Image (tube, rainbow, N blue to C red; front, side, top):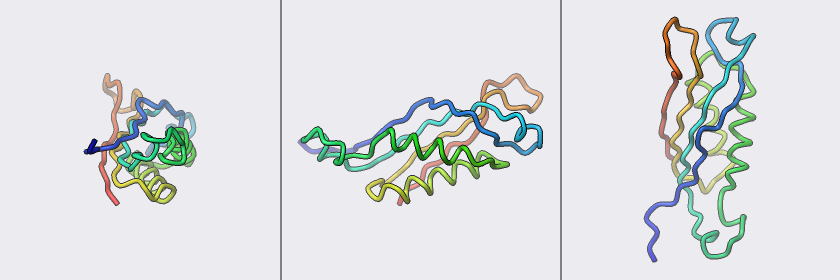
Length: 122
């Protein structure tokens, strides 16, 4: 068998955080959603059923949760910190596709979410 792509997914992770341009946004906070697709070689885990042969999605979640705990004015900045952290903590990660959205952003519109999507590779 030839593996053509190996991706670890985190979908619709809901995190409460204090990101925002306005002081009130940083004071009251809001809910944010993170979707992440991480390309990494987990061929060993496919064969052995051993966690050391992959990147644990629980560890990826920990990175997201810890980086989201530090307030940023911009979701772009928070997304950049998450990317840097994952690349730093997991040398086997080759590519990350990340979406970070803010629920019901205070912009005077009826909008479920607004945010950013970014893809980065090592």
